[in-house]
Amino acid sequence: MILLLARHTRRPPMHMRLFVASSSVSRAALSSLSSSATDAKFYIPRKERATSNSMYEIDNIYDQRIKRRRRIDPTRELNYTPDHWERHKSVFRRIKHMLTTFGSSPFQRLMFPDFFVTSMIAGSLTYYNNFVVIDASSQLWIDGSGFAAATTAIALMTGFRLNASNARYAEGRKLIGAVHSTSRDLATNTMMWIKLREDKKRMINLIKAFSVAMTFHLNKKGAHHSIRRCLPNFEEQIYAEYQAELLDIFSDDQNEDFLLLCNWFWMKENVPLGITTLMRQIIAENEQKDSFTRELDIHVHRLVQSLGGCERIQKTPLPTCFTRHTSRLLWIWSNLLPFAIYPVCGLYTLPTTIAISYSIMGIEDIGVQLEEPFNILPLRQYADNTYDSVHFIESAYASGKYAS
Image 1 (cartoon, rainbow, N blue to C red):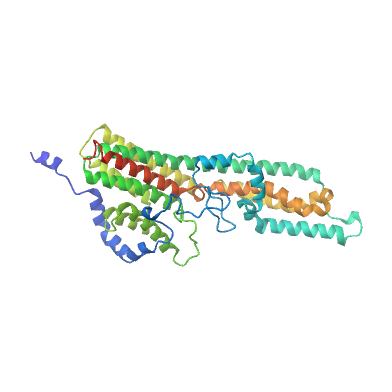
Image 2 (tube, helix red, strand yellow; image 1 turned 90 degrees about the horizontal axis):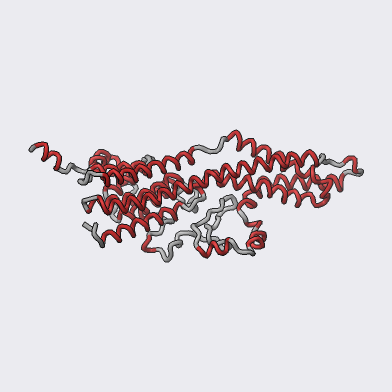
């Protein structure tokens, strides 16, 4: 009889025990920052958004990408719609692309110091050979035939570098997509198989919070790319944006999960991993112990796997010996290029040098951007899509058979 009572008596939720254990730390840390939730400058709550993309400053020329605020910023695309795909495949795309060459990310990122140094060398060489020396035998140049072979090797190396970086980008996109799909499945199973209404609501909120926490875990700015690291209150501003996003999910700034997740973030803990721990505690305490409960844990396991894959990409670059060697060779090649093409181009050495350098060095620069996929993928859009999908699943099931 005592064993039966012990078995059916519901213990205090595990998250309560975790929260009480850290309450002295969390409340002390959060009380000093309690006012920062109202200081979020970049996150717009869902109820205040005019459109789904109203949070983003869209580029004036390409309406499917975020506006680049600085010359060195990479290109950051938003999710495509059928209209975007129609323009992307337009037969006039090459004309538009040529007209926007000087405003493109690779060109502007290479302007200084790469093109500046190469231009100085090409301009000085052209001036010296045409206006300083008297006879052709005193001109400076090198044999272009041997340099052509070196150019082929450089092009192959930069192409390999781009392919390796693109593989990282593609894998990162697949892992983020797996988080989105798994979150949908987990929300569906939660609404069907978690028994208590309060546990359902808590689980749904944690699923929504997982994508937000993962965004801030993989991107220091939480994909708020307008925030500058040089700000004196950079850490506090990031915390304010994170807190505002979670508050949009939990609605109550005294919610225990909300406070715990904020505390973990401020203490620089692995918040997404902590969320999966809370999810598994809910599953373990669920009254229904059968294959459906195990299915819930399998979905949480998939979230942990996707998180681990993203962390592997984030923490492990391409072998730096290769990328640095490629960078050195490109620098030497671009600065020797004017000497190789001067006998053919003469006074037009400078513009020709820039054009050829752009074609090769631009490939390498795109590879540099793709190597860190979580700096250019639209993580914020993915998190919003996950929220919308999970919220719709919750609303659909709440009006049906599994509403209890």
